[in-house]
Structures are given as structure tokens and as C-alpha cells.
Image 1 (cartoon, rainbow, N blue to C red):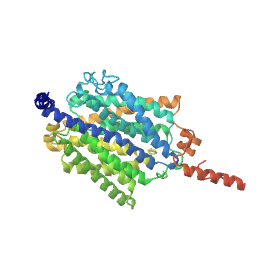
Image 2 (image 1 turned 60 degrees about the vertical axis):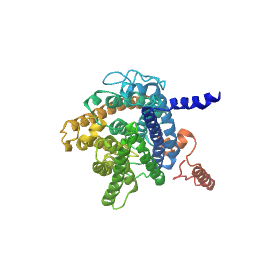
Image 3 (image 1 turned 90 degrees about the vertical axis):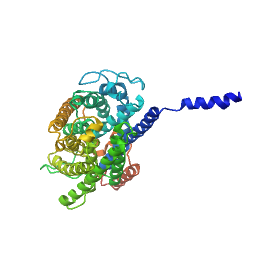
Image 4 (image 1 turned 90 degrees about the horizontal axis):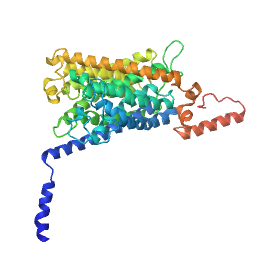
Amino acid sequence: MAALLTFGLPLVALAAEPTPAELASAIDATWVMVAAVLVIFMQAGFALLEAGATRMKNAGHVAGKTILTFGICSIAFWALGFGLTFGDGNQFIGLSGFFFDGADESAFSSLSAIAIPAGIKFLFQLGFVGVSLAIAWGGFAERAKLSVYFVFGILFTIVIYPVIGHWVWGGGWLAELGMQDFAGSTVVHLQGAVAALVATMLLKPRIGKYNKDGTANLIPGHNQVYTVLGVIILWVGWFGFNAGSTFGSVSGMFGYVAMTTNLAAAAGAVAALVISWIVMGKADIPSMLNGVLAALVAITAACAFVEPWAAVLIGLIAGVITFFTAIWFERRGIDDPVFAFSVHGIAGIWGTLSTGLFATPELTAQVGIGQAGLFYGGGLYQLGVQALGVLGAMVYVFIVSFVILGILKATMGLRVTEEEEVIGLDLSEHGLYGYPELLRAEEQHVRSVKKEGSGDVSGSLT
């Protein structure tokens, strides 16, 4: 027994030691799991950003539906969405891997080169579709029925998102052409933004947003601190979003991607604040926050393909064009409460096209996707593929979103009643105000006015 303990156990321990390949795979898997958590935690950023950018009477509803819709998305993506996006099928859609069991990867050839556990791959990709859906909800804010979130959330996850996802990342026709969308400027952000635009158009503007002459009124968000905190969370989460899309850490590429991501975000913040200062005469904080997000959206496609100086330029341009397009859409009667299409749509288009301009031969070869950009001798091919991908995604998402939301509008209705909108969705949809102390003060005000006999309760939330 003594001899066995002395000589046998060290041999068993030695045999159990992982090989270098196994160790590298474990390190990569750990990093991608951390990245998946960061991406999923971006939901907290969207909750704070959207709640802070809308009015106090809707704050609880806006924040709470984030939890609801991510739950809906998680179940729908597990059941059908994951297989439709990454499952083996044809050039247009996946046809296998439904009700994923977390282990069997035989139906997912597009993910076979990634040497990490299948469950981690699922969680990481789930975070992405959750972000895309969160972007779409920006166009619904402050006037959509809660029931619409159930129906459209399911259909977005299994009918809209998987199609473009398969085209680009699942081995579809855009993947075969070599489209460069490293972490989803088109697949994630542009899809969500186009759905938000359709919702905004069909729901029509919020009560009081526009005057009879068509001029827009400012409807400020109730908590600018919330919006700042939301953007900070999203900025940090983006390191999981972009750098996690390397699906590994051993090569060190994830550090480079994180660096270009941060440089772009910083440039977008500064550029948007400065341009708002020049145009408006004041340094506008919401414009700066939109500049950060627009820059992050833009660099998402290009982060692994471009040099640091190009990342700065991409972020700077994104911050500027988002500022002007937000103003332009508002003046055209598009009431987009959180500027979802300007921030995620316009910037997503620019970011996707930018790889066709700035992608370097060295980085393209290292990542193994597409060709060099126009400014690096690659000609017009890659820029053309990028433009085709943008156009195809926009047309598909717009048409399908319009059909789905149009049917919902004609049947169950999209928008709450005027009375419910005036009261606020916290009370009308949930029966509880997000800020109960203020509600109590309002009720006391109404009772005091009625007691005095004037009967005038104008200005109160009720």
C-alpha cells in the first residue's frame, strides 16, 4: 500500500495533466465564457440607457421589459433560432440543430472550427441576438402594448435575426462571398435598427412630440445619470462583444480587437460632443453618449481588419454622422425616442462599409475573411460585397418587420390608448409606478385639489 501511494499516485496525476492543446482550449473557453457574460450584461446597459432617456412615468416599464424580452429571446433562440442561424442547411437558412441539447455539435458545421464547448458557443451567440432585439425595442418605447413585446420578440428571434445571421456567419451566401462583419455591425445592430425604424413608423409619434406645423418638441429623458451609466456598461460590455468574437485568447488577437474598439469609442465621444457644441452652442451630453454608441457600432464590423488610426477615423466619422442624422430623422417626423436607427442603423451601415475601405491585407489574412480594402490595393470587390450585404439585410428586415408589425397592428393593435399613454405605461400596463413616492405625491395633490372644490387636476399624472 505504501509503495502504491508513493509511486502510483504521482503517475496518475501526471497522466491527468492536460496537453498544451487541451490547456489552450480551456483558456480560450474561459475567455469566451467571460465574454458571453459581458455581452449578456449589456442588457443592464440598455435598461439604464432606455429608461433614463424616456420619461419617469414609463421608467419601470422600460427597464422591466428588458428582463421579459431577454427571457423570451432565450427560449426562442434555444428552440429554433440557434439552429436556423448556425445549423447546417442551405445558403439562405439553417435546417438542423433545433432544441439544442448543449452538447451535440454535429449539426453546426459553421461553428466546428471553434474548439470550445458547445454550450458556451450557444450562450455567446444568445447574447448577440439579445442585443439586436434590445436595439429594436428603442422604436417601440413609451407607446407600445406589452403584448406586442411577446409576439414580436419571438418572431424577431426565429424569423428575422437567424436569416441574416446565417447569410453572414452560418455559411450562407454572403459568407461565401467573403463579407466582413467581425462582430455584427450588420448582423446585430443594423437588423435591430431597421426593425426599430419600422416600429417607429407604424406606431406614429408620441403624444405631444410634434406641433401642428410639424416642428418637433423636445421630450427629454428623466435621468441623464442613468443614460451615462448605461453607456459606460455598454462600452465595457463591448469588449466582450468584439474581443470575444475572436473565440480565443491564446493567439492574443483579442487584445488587438479590444484596443481598436476602445479607440473608436473614444473618438466617437469626443467628436460628437464637439460637433454638438459647434452646431448647438452647447456641449450636449446625450449627443456625446450617442457618439460613443455609434462609434462602437461602427467599429464592430471592422475591429479585427483595420489599423488603430483607421479605428479612430471610423469612430470619429460615426459620431459626427449620427449627430446629424438624428436631427434629420426627427425633422422628418420620425419619433425615435432613443435614436436607435441613427445610432445603430446609420453607424452600422458606415461600419460595415468601412472594412471595404480600410481592411489591411495582413489583418484580413490573419482573420481569414474576405479581401483587403480599397485603400490598401484590394480594389472595389470587398467594398461591393459589404454594400451588397448591407442592402440585402436592410431589405429583408424592413419587409419582414413591416409585414409582422402590420398584421399585429391590424389584429391585436400595436399602441396603447391615448389615456394609457398619458398616464404612463408603469401604471397602465403594470399597475405600479416606477417611482412610487412620486405617485403618492400626485395622489395627495389630486385629493387636496378635490377637497378644495376646484376640481382642477391639470398637470397631474392621473
